[in-house]
Length: 209
Image (cartoon, rainbow, N blue to C red; front, top):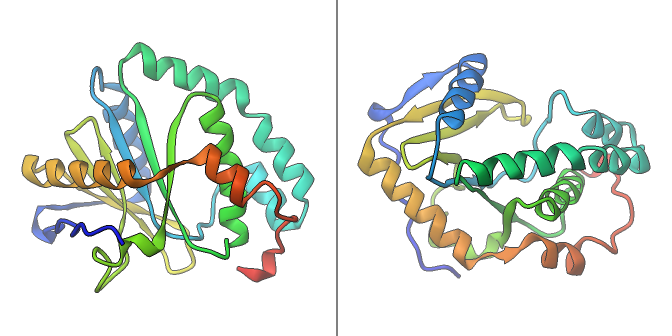
């Protein structure tokens, strides 16, 4: 168990952003980052990805097509990693995993493995190590951009994206950035996790979600 208490997210500091506003705000702030890293914490085990042809193939039960479409993104992912290097801004992602894996997470780990192959910094962390931080509630979905902006990413109960809450208070952002860094440091590289826990699995069955 990771003996690390999560910081708080004071509601009065946050600004609720609807989905389109959040996406635009994220793009603009992310593009302006130079010389600072960013950090993402993914906790939910299931999302309703929108606008993903590979995710749609998974939903149809066409696993081979889902994997083919993941691989088709390789060139764009390499270009994105190169752009981050030019800006001296590395995006770190920590993926919390529960076992047995949901069909969604099995699919996502294939996508994350490819991102890592293309230069992204991604680690996994077993959910069982978070007991100290999740005594009352599961950790939220979070992104810290360049040490200046914290987003709590929101979803409906069924996993559909539902905008975000933006925080810019320096101390709140700093505490959460340090917390995610600590979790990331305790994690395992996604490529080694994938090779051991995912690569051998048969195609997932979507009705198991």
